[in-house]
Structures are given as C-alpha cells and as structure tokens.
Length: 265
Image (cartoon, rainbow, N blue to C red; front, side, top):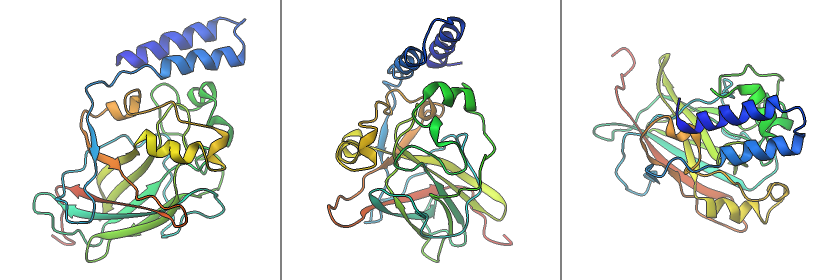
C-alpha cells in the first residue's frame, strides 16, 4: 500500500470513528489528505501528435471503476453540454510505427459536472460518497442505470485512425481531468490507459465556461493523483488540445502498442 493510501486509510478511520464530525468537516479532511503531493518524481510528457512526431509505446494506466462497454459511434455527446472536443487517435505498432487496421478503440470520460454515465451523479463532488462507492482500491462498480453518454467505440481504418466528437471532460473527486481508452482486437486487450491535460488549460475552461464553472478549478493534478502513480511510466499521456473560441477543441495522439497480431496471424 503506498503512502498516500495509508494517509487516506488513517483519515478515513478518524472521520468514520468520530460521530461528532459533520459532513462538511468530514469531506474537508478527506480532501486535504487526497490533495497531498506524492508524485514529485513522476514525468508526464506530451503524447505524440499526428503531425509527424514519432510514436512511442503508450504506457498502461488503470481502467478505473466506471468502465462500461461502449456503443460503436463517433459522436458520443448525446445531451451533454460543454466545450466541444474532437479527439483523433492513431493506433500504430511499436516498433516500426505501422498503422493498426481493424482494432477497436473504446473511449469514455465524465461530463462537465464530473458525472459518468451509468452511475449516480451526486458522487462526483462528494469524496466521502465516492469512497463509499468504489472503496480505497477503486474497484470496478457495475453500472446502476442505462445512461451511456460520453462513451464510444470506433474501429481503426487503414491508417489506424479513429475520431470521436465529444466534450472536454470535467473533474470529480479525487482525480485530475482525464480521458480513458482501450485498444482491443480479436478478443485481445492490447492497452488500457488514460490521457491527461495541463491544469492551466483545464482552468481556462473550468473558471469561465458553464456548466464547468459551477465547480471551479480542479484541485487535483498529476502531482497528487493516486491512479497515475500505480504505473511508473506516464510519458506520452498528456493531451495538448488546440484552442478555439468558436470551434471545437482539436486534440490528437498516436497510440503505440506492442504484440499486434494480424487477423489469422
């Protein structure tokens, strides 16, 4: 168990055992523990984009508790409001960089209020309720309703490309903003990972645009995130969208996988 989990466990015991501690106080104490910087040595670097940058092997990240198999579609927004985002991903083989055709890329993330489809929206900004739902080990939780917004799957074309029309994710307790994705082919899982964003870029949206602004700046970063530290390598996981005041944000990344097998091969 890492030191941050030890802090959270101890804090959880204190606030659970003290019946006099009110809801607000309880969440304040847990929030303080969750925001302690623990990842000083972690290196989070930009993902290779589609403008000629060489691909790298994309590091693994945890699946998280809120994975639900996604419908095959490009536009995943449904009724969710937020800053529009076009996310383009190219899957390539490492070594060599040849495009992977026929792979399935699944993508999912929370909405502008920090809620995941399939799960109760009220847990997003209540750390105590979040921990009660997923536990300190962030175990998988079966979906609790039929909503599936901001989830989608696409099959890579001959150039290894997929594209999703979505919105910029919000944030929830106790994670920095991120986008989950998987690469699957022929019933084999090749990669599970997450993309992250620069805090200054996030706050450009969170502080000034509704509905994000109702929750303000995110207090969580790569420096104090537990999930990102579970794998030591975070290089190539930083998305850097191109800003536009009037058009969707544009973000792209090359995803490098290893061990690819052609159909029948």
